Amino acid sequence: MDKAGLGGGIGVLASVVARLSGAPWWVVVVALIVIAGLVALQSVIPQDSRHRLDWWRDGRDRRERRQERREERRRVREQSPAPLPSPARPPLDTVPLHPVEPRRRR
Image (cartoon, rainbow, N blue to C red; front, side, top):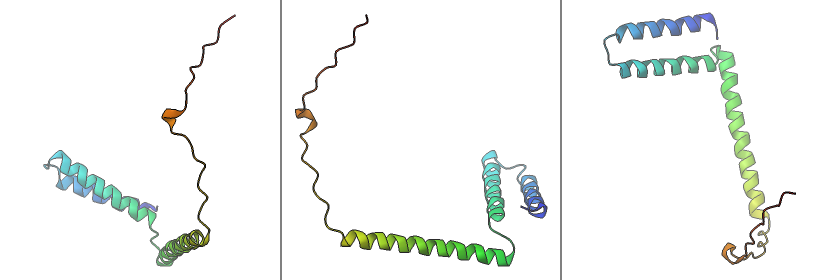
């Protein structure tokens, strides 16, 4: 992030704190969280219009590729034969449990 963005965020933060000096503590905390979230969001999204356009296109392309892979997996699943049933297992309460004898020290 450039220094102007950081300075702008600090300036907004200082003005909000000055305005909320007599407010309840929870109002100040909520305001600070919202401002910090907005500053973080601004630092993640590119500010140059050409870079911003590339950023949005990359996101859209990624979503489209993910959707295509999801549809391809669904088609393969629909075309494949039904899975074989698993071998029958006896219920756990019918399986005899043998206690393990402790080892003896020599």
